[in-house]
Image 1 (cartoon, helix red, strand yellow):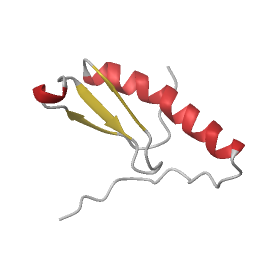
Image 2 (cartoon, rainbow, N blue to C red):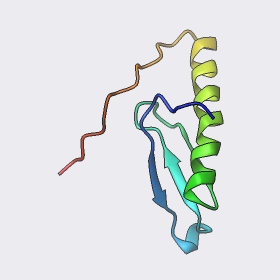
Image 3 (cartoon, helix red, strand yellow):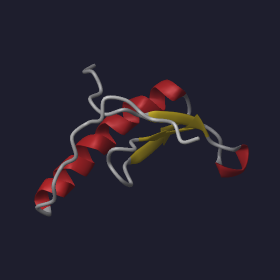
Length: 74
């Protein structure tokens, strides 16, 4: 499995939303996926990243470069 270029935030989903885990890519607005486990969410978000980038290219939009790290809002 290849290394993720974009930082990903993985967080648990509430039981009211079906449980599991969400994987969110802050550098790519709207790019996210989920899974039953953190590992599954990360595996699924790889496909979401590829799809997001392909769609942006098709629309002629700029692809953001991966940030080096996430800064936590305080």
